Image 1 (cartoon, rainbow, N blue to C red):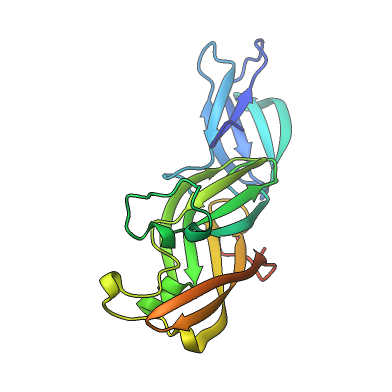
Image 2: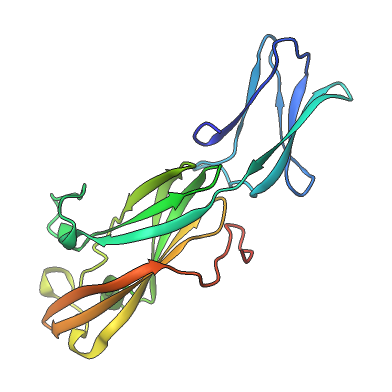
Amino acid sequence: MTETDLVVELASDTNADSVNLINPNGEMNSLQRVQEGATQVTFQLLGEAEDGYTPGEYRVVAVTGDDTIGETTISLEPELTITAVKWAQNHPDMDWDKDRSTWQQLAAFSIENTGNAPSFLTMAQWTDAPLCRVKSQKTMEFGHNTLLPASETTTVYSSAPIYQTEGRLGMGAHVNCSDLGTAPLTVTGIVQAGANPSYLQTIEYGGTNNSCELTIVDGGPTDSTQTTSNGEDA
């Protein structure tokens, strides 16, 4: 794998017309013609214009005419875990957009990919976050276009002040901090390949409704039912 692409190398004396990629269901995933003199072909599996791939074992088949002249298999298995959710106010040394007046209420989360293949983060869903309570929404969704390489941990920054507890400039709705006690926040990453990882964080709401005081109590990856990018239970 090279970033979003599967690169297939051919021996210099291979006389193949095309290379076929067969998915775990035994169906043709893609076909690439071999250009004259070329020793490799590339299959794009991830990206903004791609739908992603189904994890599992793939067959890579070199073909001349109707004949198979070479074949191999490769396992593509991303393994994704959200390992941390961080509040800017508690982590001021991170790479926040400090030109924003609300930067201290921003959030970031880390996704670790311990698998052997990449995935692609397309969206983050924040459920029961302080900002959701301000907006009177159960869940808020924000788009991302972030590659999650194999064997790497990627930090993803929110585009909205997730830990905000009142409307802009003090106007509008406020979170009823004095009534909540402790409450959960869940972030779920929607990915193109693999199971969508989630993280549950417990927040203690204190202070008054006009002056909220938030405290992060604990947090960790959730083992609740996850779904793959095509909606199937994982």
